[in-house]
Each structure stands twice: as C-alpha cells, then as structure tokens.
Image (tube, rainbow, N blue to C red):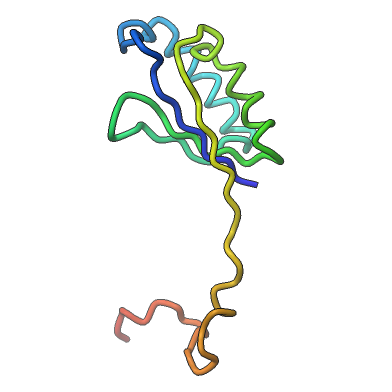
Amino acid sequence: MKVIAYDRFRPGVTMDTITPLLSKEVANVWRLWKLGVVRENYARADEPGVVIVFEVDSVDDARRYVDDFPLSKAGYLEWFYLPVEAPLPLESLMDPSVDVAEPYDRTTTG
C-alpha cells in the first residue's frame, strides 16, 4: 500500500528552528529510500514542509517511521496521512469498442 504523508510546521516553528536537525532528517529519509520504504519525496510548493510517499502495509507503519524522524521527535511537525491504492481497472468502465490495446501513446507519428 502507498501512504502519502505530508507535514505542517507547528505554530512558532520556522526554518531557523529546524535547520540544526535537517541533515539528520534528510539522512533518515535517504536510508528509508534506499530500503524501498520511501518511494517519493517532495518539498511542498504551498508552504514549508515535505510530502513523502511510503510503500508500507498500513498507515500505522508510515506513522511509526515518521515518529522516528528527528523533527518529529523534537515536536516541530504535525503529520497527515492519506492511504491510497490503485483504482479498479479503468478498462472495465469503458465501452468495449474503445481501443485500449498497445501502443498506448498514439500522439507520435511513424
């Protein structure tokens, strides 16, 4: 299962507050990435923070990893979790006359 986790700074926390722990935070996420637990990692575009896509069995598993992050242990972040899964096969919703065979990309010529 994929779990999308995103954070928000707690009130009063700034970039200056978290900077001393950032190298440990990044190293922790990198280790999880190399293990295949973290699949994607993004900086938020709307406010300071990150979005992490976990490959885990449950939201509780993602929460256990996040709880071990240095910034979480310091109480600087509030985390939110979205469990997601693949939708049902889209072809099942289509009219049988719709061509879904390869090649899927028909925008190129040749």
